[in-house]
Length: 223
Image 1 (cartoon, one colour):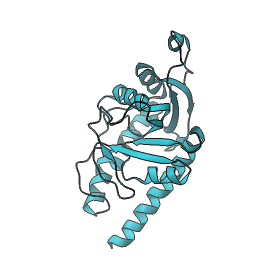
Image 2: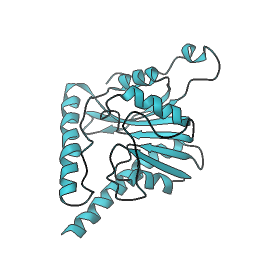
Image 3: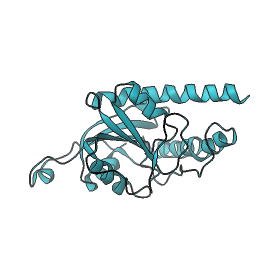
């Protein structure tokens, strides 16, 4: 019973991770060193290494990895890495769960010498918010507890509690507050068009005094 479930579990997560890596890889330099913040089961890091990342380190607030070496644990606020030690950082569907998204984005920008890549589900209208709340519960606490009961993941405190829903515009505002510049936003429709799985490519401010304030960021359309 458990073995077939475990096989289906890995196939589904590897399929999802492969699609995610396909979206992320074009925005990374060749042979990039990458930090996956909120790495979860480890499938995303595995897929990114398969797509050409030289290294993909992992960090999370709890350890429930099932592939790879597992994450470096941190408190959700301060990453235990030196400044600019990675080429890029990835936050895949993380900002809705963190206590302080601006602080976490700022930390990602500190440890990355290049880009901070954010994947975020953004609702479109009231129906989208309702659908996203429901999906967040099903794919978050419910799925986490069920997978732990079935021994598909190690038993650990559930980290997945949706604290906020973020529009495209709000993600851009959070990036501004964190001192990052939105270079581009790449949408992907999902969940019957009620939710968009958007990729935000963030960069540090341009070199030189005053340039960060004078360079406007691209504006994204409100959902």
